[in-house]
Length: 272
Image (cartoon, rainbow, N blue to C red; front, side, top):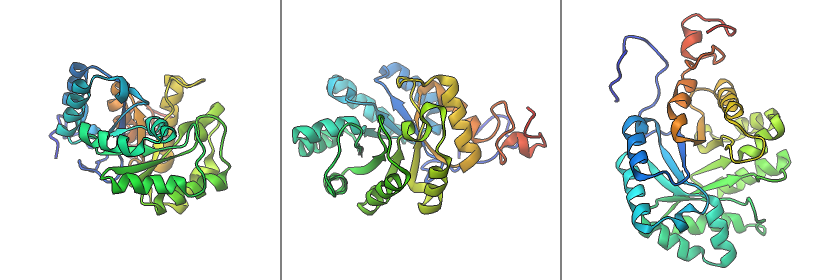
C-alpha cells in the first residue's frame, strides 16, 4: 500500500499495483530518460502499462530503448510495442523477427491492430496467437483511425480477439469519439457483452485532427462518470497522470462522478 499525506481526508480507494482493473496506460512519445525517471519517481504508482508509441522503437538508439524499458519494469510498469509498428512488420513479412527483437530489447507485450491494413478472415486471430506463442503478451486493438466500423462489426472484432487469447482489447478512441460525438449505444453494448477488466478505452491523442486537451479531458470525465472509477484507460500523457487519477476519484473540480469524492461529501452534481 502507498503511504499518502492527508490520509484523514477520505476519498474513493483504488486497487493497488499490480492492478487488474482501473488500469492506466501511459503513452511514451520517446521522452528522455531523465524526464522519464522523474515522472516515474513522482507518479509511477499510478501507471500500469506504457506504450512506446508508433514506430519510435525502430529509430531510438538501442541502449536508450533498453534503459527506458528497464526503468519501466523497475517501477512495476509493463512496456509494450504499439500496433502501427506491428502492422509495418506484418506487411514486410517480418513479424517473427519483430517478436524476437521485442523480447531481446526487454518488451513483454505488443499490440495487434488494423489501423492501416485489413486482415484476411482469421488472420488477426492468428497473429494474436503467434504473438502469445512467441512469449509476448498479446493485446488487440479494435477500430481504425480513419473510417468507422459499424456497431455489429466492432463488437464481433472484440469477440474474435478475446477468443484468440488477447490479454485485453484496446478500443480506438477515434472510432468512439470522432467529430465530437460519442457512440454511447456501442459503448453500452460493449459493457454488456464483455468483462470490464478485458476492455481498455483509449483516450484521443492530440496529434489527431480535431483533438485538443479540453476535449480529451472531457472524454476522460465522461468515461469515468459513465463506466465507473475502475474503467481501464489508455493514451495518458506523462503530464496527465495525476489529473487522470483525481478524475477517477471524482475530485478534479466538478461533482459529476456519482461515486466520486465530491459527491460522497455531499456536493450536488452542479457544484464543486
